Length: 97
Image (cartoon, rainbow, N blue to C red; front, side, top):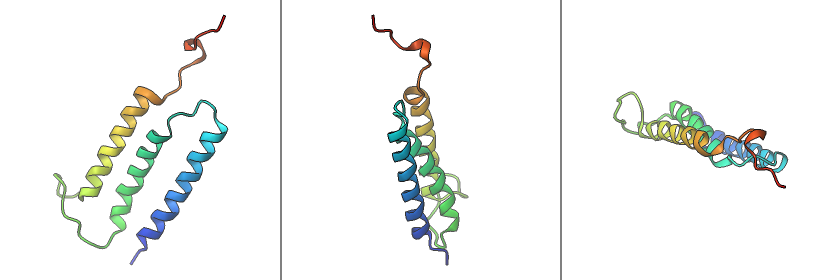
């Protein structure tokens, strides 16, 4: 069988490193949670295909419950990113006099 838990540990370590790097090097990077939600949701959706056990069914019979939650997590992350996470341009910043 495929060691999905090992792959997930490796993925989460790399994701942590990426988000830490972005947080330390980019001063305007404030959307780490949103990127985590999106990237982890994508990972989890595809990781469920590698699992060898039956986890039940979501509303759509083809998807497992974890895949359904992953889709919701991706959508929520995208919505939050659009609403709060995209940095505004230089024209929108307040000028200090």
